Length: 254
Image (tube, rainbow, N blue to C red):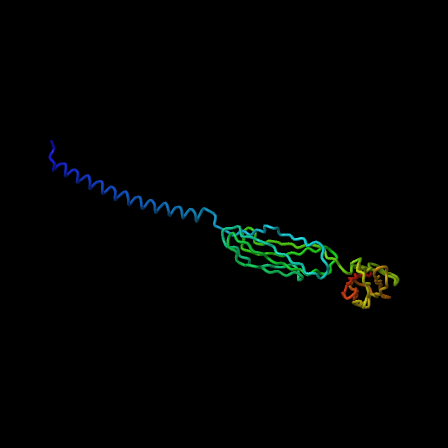
């Protein structure tokens, strides 16, 4: 039978061995944990894509205002969202026409939030369909410029055809002339207050015609040779509405 002292000595050594092993294991565990955490951060920073803003117009980027009367103010709000993971910055909003004005509600938009860009347009007297552009410049790396469009037709109180006239001839005779008709669908009569030409190379006159007037444009006698761009300007009146209309006249005399 072994002596108790032997067992006591062996037991003490065993306890010291186990305690030392535990200390070593804990230090290894902490070092390994720190290394894993460091690697995760490093991989996330170097390999995974960084967050970025993303501009989206959920209700569309085109607005058709239909048909509006000349001079009417048209307003529309283009709603946009930031569907990215970083702040969206609106750097600038540019209108392609002086007849259009813009206003942004916010210039910094956190992720998940929405805002709007207000666009105003005063219907100008044009006979073609209006297509107005607005460009939104942001820090979205995939779509730095977003194009917004307002389109529609303007109902004119006075309209005319053709929009311009041309004279292309050699040894032009004095009896050559062009006609432009001006009409209105108003119950008020169309009148001409004044008519002028940009130079003495052309002559212009007007007379009543059906529901409107007819403008006659002719070359002056002995019109010199050359290429010119002239214009005829009429001051028209419909009721209390007054408007100045310019007709381009292109001359190419050989």
